[in-house]
Image 1 (cartoon, rainbow, N blue to C red):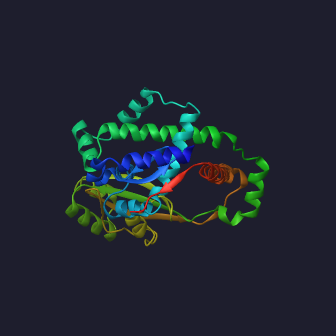
Image 2 (cartoon, one colour; image 1 turned 120 degrees about the vertical axis):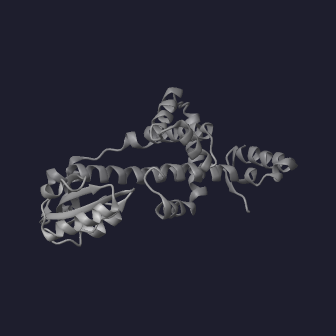
Image 3 (cartoon, rainbow, N blue to C red; image 1 turned 135 degrees about the horizontal axis):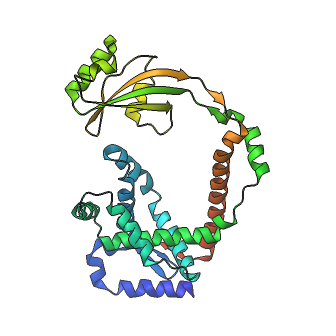
Length: 303
């Protein structure tokens, strides 16, 4: 029956000459009794771009977006199957939850017009964003219901993993730094110079406007690349050149280096719990999706 319905959709759309006038409406796949169009692919890519743009920009953003392009259609197909399952299970999302999520996103913008402009840059309107958020929530709900709620990590699994992988739980070398932040490039270069000569921060306070903070840094752990490249070249008491980030200038002084140490089972327990749980979820999600795909009619159309 699924094959008959899908064939009927193909025939119906082939009889509609207007559809072929718009490349975005071009059908690229059929999943059971629903179609995926080129516009669906574009919208999905733009939605992903908008999500990544919260944390990335420029070359880093483009590299991240390009990394998901190859399997984008497969992700769309899997999402379509999961949404169909959510519909079969009669799962629904309260409009208030979607509205709350939209409002949360809007808070990142100074003006609503900035929010709308950012949407337009991605070829989206607010209704598109609401629909994508609804689909995300439905997908999460069905995965929670069918997969995540059935996963359990036993205490002995955590202990066994720790004993077999102790070397993975060596705490990295820790660098303790003072961070000086200035708004003016010239002042930052000058202050870096005098700090290297041995002047004290309190003596420079009357000559420059700056803020001071402390930073504990581990190599390879969530530091911006331009910061990591600077701070892990410093020797103790050394001062860096100013590093420009987002229109501000950062000077780093290395105060101390703490050597690596072995984490105890108690210290590593939460990290292992998260890792094993996520691993099991991914394995079971793959099995579940593979089973659904075998039961579904999926047709990818040639370009």
